[in-house]
Structure formats: C-alpha cells, structure tokens
Amino acid sequence: MAKCVRLLAVALLGIATIAGVSAAPFTPDDDAVILERLPEVRDPALTALKKLRTVQRARPDDLRIATTFARRAIDASRATGDPRWLGQAHAALAPWWAAPNAPDSAVLLRATIKQAQHDFDGALVDLDRLVDRRSDAAAQARLTRATVRTVVGRHAEALADCAVLSPRVAPVVAAGCRAGALSQTGFAAEAARGLDVALAESGVPPALRAWALTLAAEIAQRDGDAVGAETRFTEALAIDPHDQYLRGAYADFLLDHGRAAEVVSLLRDDTRNDALLLRLTLAEARLPAEGTAFSAHRAELAARFAATRLRGDTLHRREEARYALVLERDPVRAVTLAKANFALQREPADLRILAESGAAANDAAALATARDWQARTGAMDPAATAALGGRR
Image 1: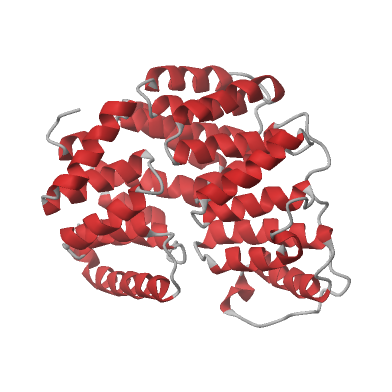
Image 2 (image 1 turned 120 degrees about the horizontal axis):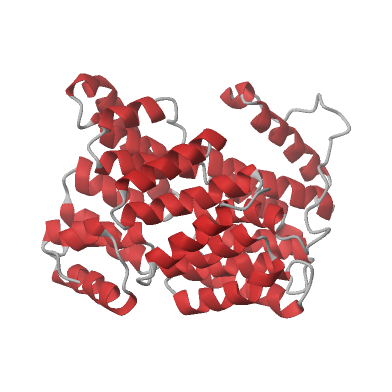
C-alpha cells in the first residue's frame, strides 16, 4: 500500500504538465470545531485532519473539501499504518464513489484508495478511465497505473506506461517509473544506472530525491551490493528521516545484515505503524536485553492482527505471514497467508515470504509457485533464492 500512496505524492511533484488536479488546501472557518478528543491531540497534523473531517461531514457534496480531506486521510493512513483512515477517505468520496463520470480528482483518489485496500482490479479500472479520457489527470494516472501493474506482476504493461509517460515527466520520475519493473525482471543493473543518471542532475526536489534513492537502495540490496544500498538508504534518510516506508525498508536491510540493535534504535518510537512495529519486534527477538519489550510488542502485534481479521481486513497478509513464520514459528499458517498474499501482489518481498514459508512448511505448491515466478520473470531476491535451495 505504502508504495502507491507514496507515488501519489511523487506524481504531484514530478509531472510538470499537469495543472489544477490537486485541490487547494482548505482552511476551516472555525478552528475550534473538534469532533473528538483522542491521544492524537499531540500530533498537530492529525488534529487538523479531524477538524477538516468535521467540516467535510457538514458539507458532504463539496468536492474541493472532500478531495482535500481524502488526500490527507490517505497520507495519515500511510504515516500511522491505520487503515481506518482509508475508510474515512472512502466515506468522504461517497457521492462520487460509484459514478463513472466522476471528476478526475475524485477518480484518482478513489483509485489510490482501492489499490491501498488491495482492490487492484478496481483501481486499474479507474486508472484506465483517466488515461483514456486524456484529461489533466492522465499522466498521474499512468504513473500510478505503472506502479500498480508492477505490484501485481504485469511488468511489460508497466514499462509500456513508463515509455509513454517519460517525455512528460521529470527525468527522475521517468527513471523511477521504469526501475521497479526493470529490477524485477532481470535488469537490475539497467534500472540502477537510470536512477543514478537522473539523480546526478541538479534541481531534483528533495521528496523526489528521497523516493528515487529508496528505490535505488532496494535494488542494490537485492543485487547484493550492501555498501551501495546502505549509502543510498542513509542519504534518503538524511532527506526525510520520518518516511515510514523508507524506515521499514532500511530496517529490513539492517535485519538481513544482523544489525538488530540498530533497528531498535531506529524504530523504538514507531509503534503506531503495524509494519514498523513488526520489524521492531523482529529485532527485539534477537536481543536478550530487549526481552520485556519483545514480549509486550509481540502481544500487541497478535492483538492487532486479530483485530484486522475481525474487520475482514486482508491488507497485512505479508506482514502477518512474516509474524507467523518468525515469531509464532507456525510455518503452516505462514505459508497459507503467504500464498493468499501472492495471489494478489508479487513484489520481491511477497516472493521472499512465499519462498521462506514454503520451505519451512515443506509446501510443494508454494515452492513451485515461487520457482515458476523466478523462472518466468527473472526476479532476483537472494533470500528467496536461498530458500528455494539456490535454484532459479
């Protein structure tokens, strides 16, 4: 989910030909209006968002307010790891949710919400509609569609979108668009070179630079270049130390290199986000001195996953599979979750948990699926390959 939500912010920065898609910030008439008082009062951004939600509910047919709130709620979901903000973004767009001729700004946001909720087919229908309209939102839609297609493993189609988009966007956005699909189909070196060339240009906005550096770091990590990966992760963190996706990716790098204590230092205060709490708990499991914190965080994760199941929420199958495999030591449950997850999304992390849980559970079907995917795509992930016995 985080990658595509991140991409929406990148698109708003990097597509020079688009104007007027993003609604202007809305300032409530009365700053004293508060719907509820929650612990998030210490977070000014969430406090402001709750005020805006009150105004939006009072004026449900105002597109400008609805899209402003929806965009900020999507950002809040990404920052906190709380999917309920996605539900509130959905609710804000209710008057335009089912309308095939809804305004472009509403269609783009509802596509973002759909993909964040793993309704990839529904998201692609909306993105196709925007591209076909050749509207002001078409370039943003094409960039988001390329990323969704990469997530679900439709790499050739993603690269076709990137090729059409390339002349219309900043070089770093074009390189980032291509890098995801290229790096997952056996062309990691080409993807990395494209990003490095784009990053060498002057004037790349900080948010775009951090995004591209994160992509480059992940590619270097999968390509076995630990020094290059760490250099890029560190540079990206210096630009945006609070980016949740980046922090999680760097934590995975540190865990893979036996640096659990650094993960604890990095994420000790990031317990609201489920994905980051998982990585923190995985690190604490390796450190006897963190035994008390580990027990508390493991119990918290179990409660959160139980709550998502009660809500019928399937957004965190990858994370729950990792939790079941490593922390519960239940490979059968882990591989069941991993197979369900891989049926929807097929990024390197999805392949890895499928291969690792399949090997641990001795699940022939899971192992066959992972081997077939590597053979057909050329996808490179050292941990997945190791779990499959080194066979590609």
